[in-house]
Image 1 (cartoon, rainbow, N blue to C red):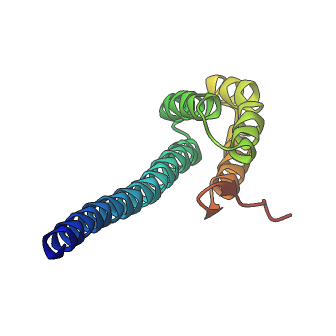
Image 2: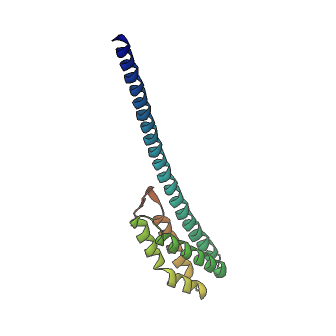
Image 3: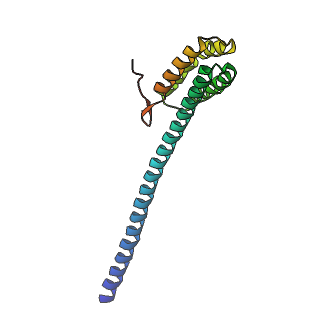
Length: 150
């Protein structure tokens, strides 16, 4: 009987150790998945911030060249700017950012036409576009565009 109890005790001990190992492994996998999810969210947020920064940079370069009355280079930056805005607006961004990009795209015809004609009023249009772009591309947090101050 002592051998039977000892064998039962060993079997129970092995089963508990095995189940403990499974439970610890499960917790580690769960923690690793949570860490991966957080890292992916941070990566996506940084990618979006980078794309918005690029749009701001192109708007600034367009404004600088237009204010120097270099309408040809300003027009080139405008073309690159609107392509980036369109591409970002069609990608999987949150709705507030998508609608902001759509509103910015609404100025495409007027801005490109005035730059093509080298009109003096192009500078004011580009300046307004730059300021609007700046306000629309600021992020309060990872998923929301800040409201434009009125």
